[in-house]
Length: 554
Image (cartoon, rainbow, N blue to C red; front, side):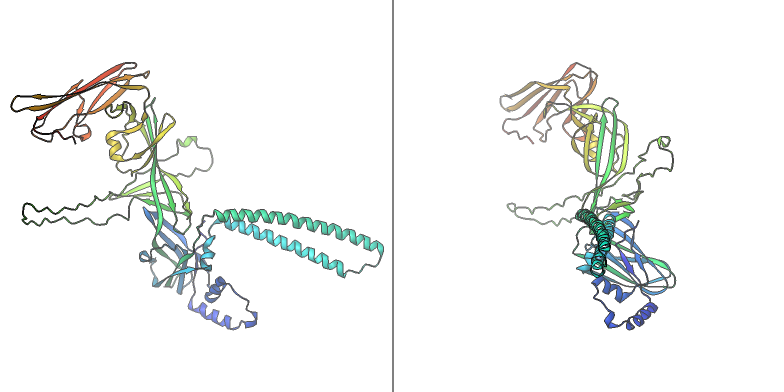
């Protein structure tokens, strides 16, 4: 069902003439006081009332693009009205598109308040409308019963009673009818109270947010045949963000990641049962690159300070999204009957801009509530290991690789589950997770203990004295699992930035990788550690430099 709260009116020249002649025949004595809505309807006398339907909503970060359509009925010159639009509508973004054979004239944009905004308040909330209709039926029923009671009261006053027997019979009949009517009135009043309370609750939590003003757009058209026009505009107050759930099974080494989109909007418009697309574009970012700085050289006295150079922060890359796979399993497992709807989200890459198109229509009320929908789900075999950085913390952590990670996944929050237990929250960043893996919490069955921590300092040479600093560290790793584990130990070695500063490092056993993940000075050991066994890693570094100088670290 399309929204019912965007009304349109069209009026031809011939209809205006008929309206004028009809209005002249109306006697002033018959005119009753009219509300503002009635005055508007009376002055225009639309030949038909059409609904402005939403054909597409595309949500970006911080705003949305909306496309609405209105039918053109009949032929000739007409004015179509898109009413009850968002007060936050970007007027500069308005554009009108018409089919061939339709001429478009001026476009009028108005901001309406007061009763106009009140009329838009709860129109379009199906639950509120239904409850209002229910309450109206109850009120009508109550009024009818009260009318019957009043008739009965008047009847007893004017009826002539001739005999005692007739009086007794009539009295009993009147009492029976009065008792029945009074009971009906009481029952209806109780239903009325319950219906009113339900309506109040619905309106308090209605999908429509309170608005003090609305936008109305009028489009002047001319057409020889029935057709339609479309209105495009941007509106602020809408956005979406990705969120992820990673579930790791350490026994089967299976990893599953579900990507969802959390959508919310407070535009002042209710989007009920609308086609929806999520775009990775951030319209708030820069739209063009900066020009290079030109160095202008000149000479200064030696004691003058150089002018400081200003640097600009790097522009964040536009986020992108991946496509989703079918969330249904084997079709043979589905119940018999009509096929179930598929909620598989499709995606399209438009030169770096990823669009997520939801297959089903979605309702997103304008009250800021979060609407969540799954946009992707990937799973596969993962490589598991225990990582320890003993110089920072004497502990081991579970890590898993995810071969199916892609740079198309946008940064977002990451909920972590290991063996069915929620262990905490991290951040989904593709580059970091691709290089370092996904951490799944501390492993209490890997015991890390420091067994050596020595620092020695001394001098060498008689004339050209050299200062030396020797540091030795050793750690023991014990596997208390009932199975072998793959252990990765991260360490570091000093990096010299001075030709007079010499560094020698010895690792036992030798390291597996230097400059781990292109990080200068980081080293890594990787090995299998059998169940219930231990292994010791030892590193010794010696730094030598002229005694006339002082050592600065970092």
